Amino acid sequence: MSERYGQPGRRVAVIAGVRTPFVRSGTAFKGLSAIELGTLAVDGLVARSGVDPAAVDALVFGTVVPDILAPNIAREVALHPRFPRSLDAHSVSRACASANQAITAAADQLVLGHARIAIAGGAESLSNVPILHSRGFSDALVAASRAKSVPQKLRTLAQIRPRDLVPVTPAIAEPSTGETMGQSADTMAKLNGIAREDQDHFALRSHRLAAAGWKDGRLAAEVTPVYVGPRYEVAVTQDNGIREDSTYEQLAALRPVFDKGYGTVTAGNASPLTDGAAAVLLMREDVARALGYAPIAFIRAYAYAALDPAEQLLQAPALAAPVAMRRAGLALADLDLVEMHEAFAAQVLSNLQGLASPVWARRAGTEPLGDVDRARLNVMGGSLAIGHPFGATGARILTTLCRELERRDGQFGLMTVCAAGGLGHAMVVERA
Image 1 (spheres, rainbow, N blue to C red):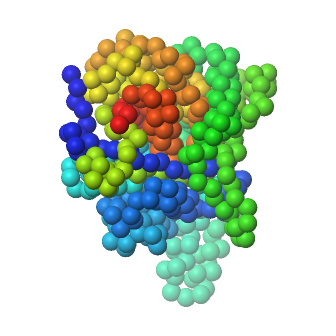
Image 2 (cartoon, rainbow, N blue to C red):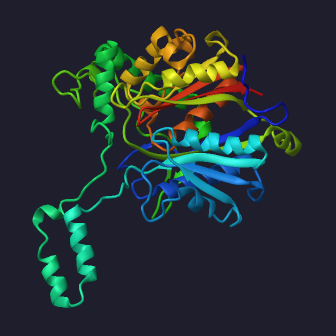
Image 3 (tube, rainbow, N blue to C red):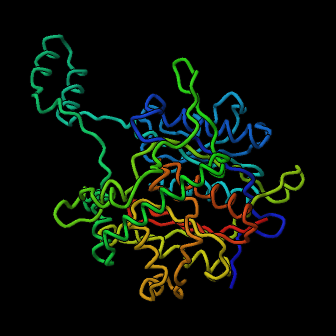
């Protein structure tokens, strides 16, 4: 039975999507914050879509590693001179599905009639993660600030030891288990029998398809150039992580990164740390029609799911996708395209197994979706090649899926995203 999202005439329309190039952290965007990247993506979206900034009712943005001095990235982006100061904006965080959370939060407001036009997306600058002080150093600084005399301050500061000066950098690890995502991906590979050879071949496929997408202009059409300071003379115009000349032999020669003795996850079959931003323009269907906008797709259904992070951290899309498909009233055979976030090749291959598994289907309370046709999967590559700015990836994938459905004259598409914390997201879109 279909539980389609939004009534006829009030469905949520995807009007346009724009992103910055996705570049490896520490390279071209190392001097830009997530707020700056987010502002650039939204600026490009407004310019390309022609939407009146004063007509936007809400801006929702996601990020995973927020700026501790400006944690509400959405509000900072909304304060761009294009927009009135009255534009409502709020930030969300759902780990790697943060942009997806932003999109569904904005879409819900449209369905409820609380907004007519919204912008949603996300940004990440992993070149500029906050570096924290140790607890001992922080305690000493606080105590010194409370001292009532200079001698007291000096005595307090004298208690600082060399070990207290060692900075603390954020770790991409689960607080509940202490395991990094890479370690969890290695575990998933072992539990699901995902061979190293299959992971490397899948990574190579991602790079080759992404390179083809840039060559024929399909990916370039989604990207707004970024002029980098201080002189702003040179523009960054494309992703810099795609390795067009990569070979299977090169990937196979890489050593495991996480489980060095028995692991299969390498730097070649894992997504790189990446900087970038992406945004989409959403409108209620009747509003889009009245303003003369042609939607490229409608959101038909979505679902979120969660599982124990200590089990298979990145397997929750196998629980979310069947629910989203049931709500959409569709079967796997109805899908023209599937876009699946590629955190790790092992994770994608495990998720694909899960979609066909009766065991995972029972856990989701549905029937198995079946085996995904690889010819319809990630047809322009994915995060393994393009990169993965945590807070932005969901908006990139939605844009790619909608635009490619339009180009291929397809009707239905499914996207999935795994996320830290054992979370998963799935969304079904329908061509307008």
